[in-house]
Length: 639
Image (cartoon, rainbow, N blue to C red):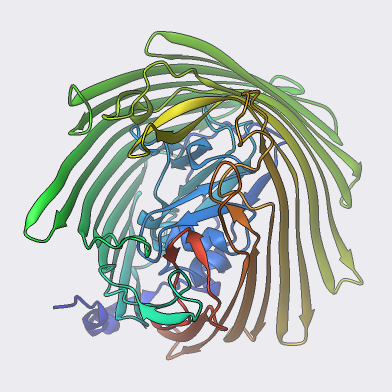
């Protein structure tokens, strides 16, 4: 029986307002609990912050679906509810570091992260750091990093939010949040559940000149999560925070539409993450520390008829410890030191010895210098030791206010380093223990402007150019007869491009308008000097050269709102020699909603959404078609 939280409305008489909508921006912003380790470094590094309007609008979606709209990131998805990975600036998904409250949660086996397993409902703050100048203590983020967290600020009374949603293809979503403050303690509990038959319509363009509309088979899924955050304010200077996050999914894995053999594939995964944070802020001193335990389990089954042909189980356990100290009283200098320790323990049926582990230690020194009111400079160096291999990285950046409050210039240079993943080294068959570490040298420069026109129009514009060389780029290629793949090092890949993003805001009477746009050009070329290699001089697979997104939003009296978004993804080559490709496509999404006050304490909201409104055919992964038009309807209670 499908679980629904609507029955909780029986609690209406005793609950006060807790709004997960536009109004939420106006609440709970007085006290910000810094429950994450963040060096705040990289003054000249490009960073993007997803605003809370977008987080609230996409609350029932996954992090992958959120980032597909309005960012310059490259998304590779196997379909709704299926694995989805993300990369920055023409790099691979392994070059993207994902952090929860400042703790890396990338898979120690794969190195990448599945963004389809993160409900946006669990996120209050998210920051994208573009490029390899990571503000965190560990190396490896050659493309960029994504840090997300919750916000557990005090509230005056008990609050509750409930969301119930229904969508095409028998897709149902329920979510609820309960929040309260008792003395020095604040608690936030969130629950999320989504299930779908996922038998969506798609266009088959493979076997016939006449394109046929078919339904996806064996793509159903269920996923659910529970997140608990407890903050205890020991004093004005001391804050203790505990967070726990349980995420589970059970999904069928649809086959490529070119496969003739009928097989049934299923994966079940459970991820548990818990962490304890402590922060002290007194005078000129800031100290923060955290301890985390991460556990992931994944069971995979593949069957042909009555016979089980493949079954494997993968489990990892990780222990992570972070510490940071910052001193802000030394004239125009701000020094910081960060330390990190991580231990990964992996048990896998796909390893020859069924077990591998890894130890990592790192220390980062950062010095920020503010010589003038319009100039900021910082630099950092990191020393890291992984399994007895010692290496160093560094970054330099600067920010110059050319015209205060109007024009700003930012620039950065960084050297980064990434070791092969445990799967790269030990997967059987195919693992390569002789792989070299990846090394990158990158530069970027940004010009940005924030201004007002006649006190009516607010403009935010930014243009960025980047250039990065990656030595020993790791990629998996077919071996021998093609049934076995193995990782190899390309001698060099050069990634360079440009990013443009802007926002225009206008208020006309009771109407508020917002127009946003993002365009990115990415050239990521294999420059390896391998004689006779057809991949030399070609674009890296699944990196589109051109991608843009545009959106328009209008609200009326903070009650009615309408949102439109269009996203274009250019041609992506799916083979190293550019002989195969997925075609370019444009998606159009429409969404509208209305909120009304039942009383001063109770609110209800309604919204509907139309995705891929014009039935565009597209593939995020070749031969894995994505859905045609889908409809969503949502009811939100703020009690």
